[in-house]
Image 1: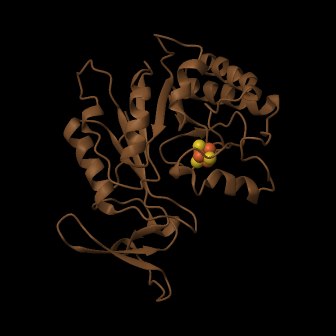
Image 2: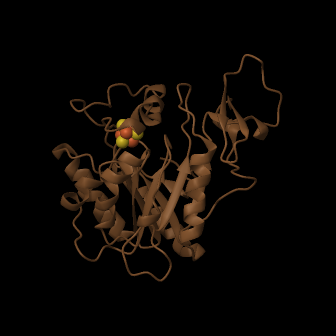
Length: 283
Ligand code: SF4
């Protein structure tokens, strides 16, 4: 995918292929499938369907980003993947996946953010055991406490230089303090938390208290916290413009017992201010 990705927490996005299969409630309104269909790419989702693969010129893009990062004297982050799950366990994906591991090793100026909902497959699909390349950040999704508990121990097994948790779309409260890695601790833990609400017309709302609780747990543990977006539903008080009376609304009770009115205004209007500020912390 393109340069200068609009996802604020990454510089580039790279997809080794397109297509996937739903695995948990976070996938219910998979934006990647919707996006693929919008671009005329039907039939890429499902366990029996084919994936879309790319030419050599696509695979050369990260080599260019790596050179640019070297010239600029900076590290740049690459999100992998937005249109697939790198750890989907199918043999037709092995060749591209192995090509990806080689590419990661050839691009030491890029930090690769591998985000998966299939964290249980990482061990058998990566070529690294013990020491991992320094430029790999490994992450998994936790949309609810149940899915956090199913996935987190698999995440913590791996010696990636950053282990991160993506609480997006956040569908319930999460208690994760016990797995956060406090500065100076040698016990393997989560080093970064990203949170956000769901986008798309069918979106489920994120209660502001869930996001605030996550932020508080991270602050207390000294772990960087990044608030990515409200998504389709946002607190009414954050919306600058007049909202139509026909806009869908729900009322929630906040942490201090206050009334919060959430409005379904769309991702762009919702923004990403949480409790009065942006949360852009990155390890
Ligand atoms: S894992 Fe990601 S790409 Fe795959 S179906 Fe779920 S949300 Fe979509």
